Amino acid sequence: IYLQDYYNTVFAVRSGGATGVVVKGLEDRNPISFRMEDKGEVKCIKFSLGNKILAVQRTLKSVDFLNFIPDSPQLEYTQECKTKNANILGFCWTSSTEIVFITDQGIEFYQVLPEKRSLKLLKNQSINVNWYMYCPESSVILLSTTVLGNVLQPFYFKSGTMSKLSKFEIELPAAPKSSKLSLSERDIAMATIYGQLYVLYLRHHSRTSNSTGAEVVLYHLPREGSCKKTHILKLNRTGKFALNVVDNLVVVHHQDTETSVIFDIKLKGEFDGSATIHQFVLPPRSIQPYQIPVADSSSWIVFQPDIIISASEGYLWSLQVKLEPVVNLLLDKGKLMDFLLQRRECKMVILSVCSQMLSETERGSLSVIATVFDKLNHEYKKYLEAEQSYTMVVEAGLSRSNPLLKRPVRTQAVIDQSDMYTHVLSVFTEKKEAPHKFTIAVLMEYIRSLNQFQIAVQHYLYELVIKTLVQHNLFYMLHQFLQYHVLSDSKPLACLLLSLESIYPPAHQLSLDMLKRLSTANDEIVEVLLSKHQVLAALRFIRGIGGHDSISARKFLDAAKQAEDDMLFYTIFRFFEQRNQRLRGNPSFTPGEHCEEHVTFFKQVFGEQALMKPTTF
View 1 (cartoon, rainbow, N blue to C red):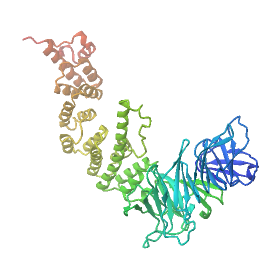
View 2 (cartoon, rainbow, N blue to C red):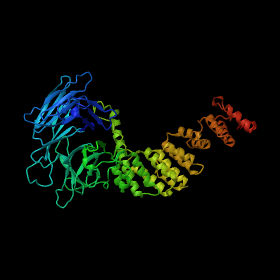
View 3 (tube, rainbow, N blue to C red):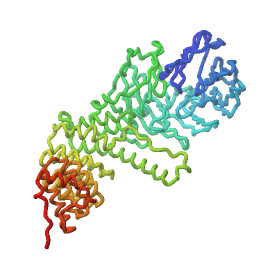
View 4 (cartoon, helix red, strand yellow):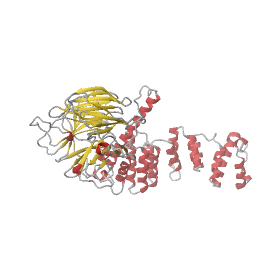
């Protein structure tokens, strides 16, 4: 069995390939099967990226190749290593046609020419190598050099080029007594965490005598500049360990107790002057089995970033993090939010935490709720700013000159106002479990947080506040919120206030004041009020802003008739008769106003004698 790291696929080779090779992966619905000639024991076997060329190492001196290209003859071709007396430790594909041989005396970088069935040496480097490690995600090969093995030399590969990065030394727990290999490949891992490449070193004994237990030391490996020790993860136990990286979390498995602990290097730690020291985020937990019982962990082999293979059982697993149980394990809500906001699939869990802290059974204090809102809106604002910057660059036409410019990705950590309104706040106010003072305080706290981050508050949040105040007859508070502009002016808000006139008469004037401040909303407000059959309110509003001489009589009479209230129709009809008299000296409607059907209706209901007579002076 052989693992191909960059596809998380496994090669099962039977009889050196003569009786079949099966290539199977986690995502593969259709495994690849083929046969090849048995030319001896297979040491290493891997497909190039894209599965077009197969490379097989059977000896210490050469690697065989086989094309898997349609209409290409399936004849093997071989490449021997260039360095005399060198032994090939292994090889890595860095692209669909580029391969690196790692020997005990250096590395050789080749381009494979499948149509010519040959290889071309691009670059080689002589260096004594004990063992090597490859991180496909970052295209970096790490070589262990020197007698002790603790000086590591990284190389970076990209489109036909090989770059030598700064070498660095791993600090061993204590000065070795003999000059033999002291740093094992087993204790080193390479992984990308939060977009940065790290070398992880499992140090079985701390360098400080007063500290017991093993630790994981993280060295940050940049493309340029020197590699630095940046984080230390305290395991507080000894024994056999293995490492995985899942969703930017470092997971350390402990064989003796069959439990795993999780570290998040984004969370705050203690700085000791050279590195940040972290304790595990959650108490140790066992891995939850998936469909099949988890076998004896002593036969496990762990691969980066998130693969576990049980050699005895013949299973390959991908490790995943379940976020729901974390909610009950991390009781500090601020720390819980910091943790969740960095995870890939976090949105629904975060929204459930928000609902939970407002619920009757697990109600949080206002200061905790405020902290959570601030953390969410900090992420929300970061996204809005990135989106705004991107839009400005595109509109300015600068995007063509910067091909690397990409639209900001909206991750699940961006919880916007509609998310909070739909999943948390509207549900919370409808339940009516909490005292109304607490409900209003929570809504105002969310609005405060949005204002603090200079995010424009959506009108539906203000509407939720107003509806909650009205439900509890807190009109004095509503008046104060509007008077002191706690609730920002908007057309929808003014409409809502107009509709409250019947239960709170001052709302009419408050609405008018707001509309005058907006000064662009008059027509829409009239339309909204008429559509709600609030014909008198619409007429009062128009009179309030001095527009009643130019409005359409027919529009108001239509609305009054639809309301099916005869007295309302009478009032509106009389108002326009009086307007006609004042403007034209005659109460009758002109043909251009198209009000004939309303005049007929008025006569039917109230009689012709009810029509206003022209007054002469």
